[in-house]
Image 1 (cartoon, helix red, strand yellow):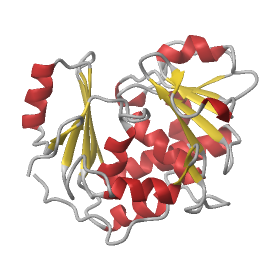
Image 2: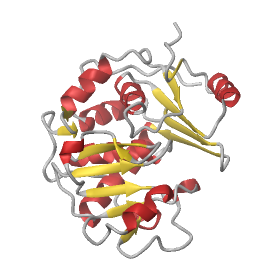
Image 3: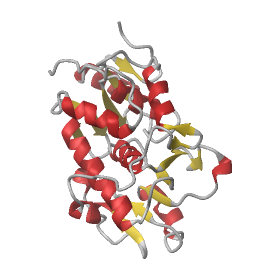
Length: 264
């Protein structure tokens, strides 16, 4: 088991600052671990591997979807390791991440923000968003092990994440870097997001948080942001009952669980 990581000495203003700080630390430690009980998949992303996925995904959003700083990306993904990847990619570009309530697909950010400029979804949202692919970029992931492509093309105009992400570079340098004043969420700047996460109480510094909430949802987002800014790690579990969650919490040595106070 790796030693607990040290959180940043100062609260970062942007996601890029935070990720760079994490990479200067123990970059080989687990950052996101994800279980899918339906498929039996277990994925573990180190800080380095997570940063690589974020870079490739950010490049896809810019180069293939023509998105730029200030645009809005709706992230409609379940409890899956790609949700933190797309959040990080969006903030690396300077996009505003629009969260969705995974229980019904409803917009969970602000009904007044209007239509998104692009959408990322899994198989559950494909039918809904396929019809919109001619007017805005739609990126779909099959959510299969190793991030592979759909067995069949997802539809005209829909970009298959698993088919297109591998050709993207391993490093991303934005031509118009976002600042702490750029919105991370509608009405919340990147600097505010990380200040709120630093002040959160879901886990202690260097802790390991287990959650079954979708990271790109109002309940799940703080689990992800606090884990990052406090030098901790996140264990995502999809499709598990309470007994299985208890077992995984012990197996993964979680120091905190979503909806419960952290252990001292």
